[in-house]
Length: 336
Image (tube, rainbow, N blue to C red; front, side):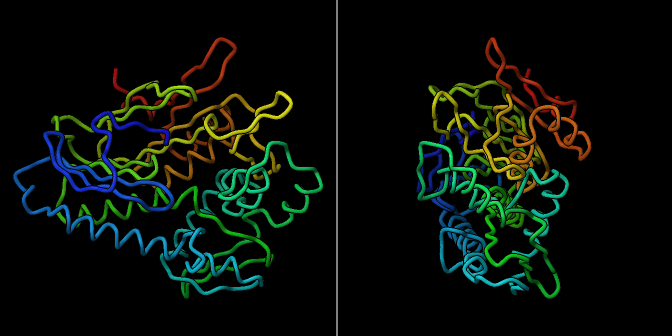
């Protein structure tokens, strides 16, 4: 996880209430989720147990569509069907895939939902571990099926087209953000006006925190040895996601290889950008763009962010430590 809630560290798998408001939490997508809301004159109408049941049901539905861990999910079945051509899917899955392909195009291929086999080859998959880089031959073989150009999406009737039968789709870099957005729809429909949602570090905030101010979260400093806040953001009616390269890596012959792979060249990023935080009205977009901008590096990230109206905060590794940089769209959110 890359973002800290400065309001409350949640106790997992529970429903509870306190002076800090009420919250529920649990497990999903191989990580944890939590929802906190501030008390109000309407608090009594929000039954935490019923709300958690709604949330768990919706998260299960999303997993059944797009999980790569569940072999029975709709996306897993597409991946397991080793044939090219059109594959019928649910409209919800097709629409998210369409969004992912759009970000792939706008990021010049830095965000790529077909890059899963590359990540696994480097030892950063769910069941993979390695302590040395793959060979050039291994990279060339796997890279043959990597690229968003090998996919197409049709919304009506909803379907995915694979040009290569061995191309594998992985929505891990956007699915958690999407799930956050879906939980926000549940809370909005219930009439809740003050809440903070978190799934695996992707966040969305609305209204006021229990202490009566906008929700505040901390951006983690890229220090693997200890948790440290680099800056504080104040959030209302926005989502935030961070991607970093400093926690998951291996070293070989004095070189550090991060789990952040540039899918365009098949190797881990080597530039000095350690962390990117993105604020967007949509958590799925923030989630995907945080990954894309980290792959691109500091200069391209700033240019792309300005082109597409993204608020970004970057931390780079410098000779004498780290340096924080952010664009004008991010300035209103930073607490000074």
